Length: 317
Image (cartoon, rainbow, N blue to C red):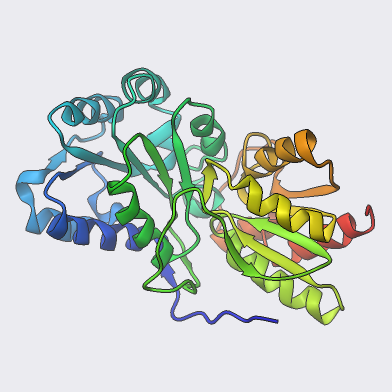
């Protein structure tokens, strides 16, 4: 069984900040817009080194999206930055009309996604943003798992033509993917080969899936783990190849089971290869205040929950 080493826990938003610093030095077309959250987005170095390429919009997120769309007309590559809730729910109309419908080359970069925003509670947490964004025609949706992958994704989307939603988080999480990785939009990453059950995970749940695979291995269950960093376009081929081998699947995400990764996988299976599936996700609920660890345990978004769902889906084969 392949094992992964935590090379030092970091927050994924810092991976975004590191990516922006590099883009500031290598891509003169990249500009940054922020809704009064410079520290939370970790973009101070980009600002210090490129003050003429930074726009502080203030707490006016809808205006930020309109300005970003306009900047693309002049050949700029705008990266907007605020919390995931304010990057999507608060400004959905502006994204739909000014960015998606117009196919503008805007990168919507969203920190503090999901329950792990923690103590700020339900009004700041968002568990439906992936669904909102993936339903927009032409929108690419990316949800990264650690610091290294977030930095790599930030660099990759600058070279990609078209609107992108990049989702990352606030808490410190294990950093385990390669520092020199090549981030391929729309290409799943097979982390662990297995024969009994497929675990398809995204974002913070990828590390939890690897931990779950260790526990299952001790029980004599061989789990295949796939990192789906790009939810749209979904790498259906990689998922179906695995599921045809294992015969069942668990999807894991820090998002509502309605509209998220699990639903996208279920659609592919319903069309091409009906297969038993279990969901690790929030169950049509808002979040609440608490530490990230407390919330992930209460809402069953951790390795233990993945193990439980794996046992359940195996019984359905």
